Length: 120
Image (cartoon, rainbow, N blue to C red; front, side):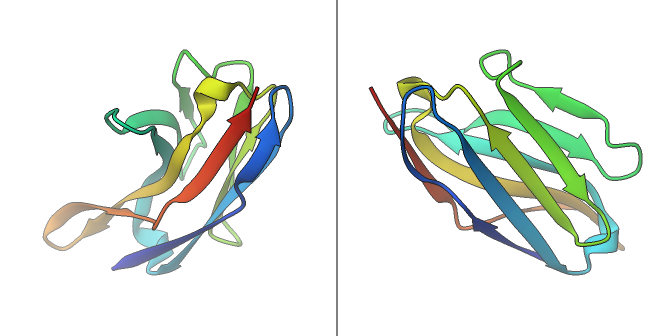
């Protein structure tokens, strides 16, 4: 199994920056993809960005392209999300996600979530 623990987040003014970090433990070498999702009040959880383990191929939501950067450190088993030029509409709980392989097939796991609040 894989466990995820997030850190970072907090309150920032519009135009500011924040960095989120997610550390994987358990069996991190089984992870294929890691990513960040977010959920604003009254809205569904949505993809923010993902990154693959082997070639670090990235994928971003259109709303964050050019402002957010996802990166990973396979030696430390961490994935970071650098968020620049933050907007009030980026306010949400941000969740780290990992898709990993088991003998029973692919599984997905989530972190506990971290609040990001952007004031106008």
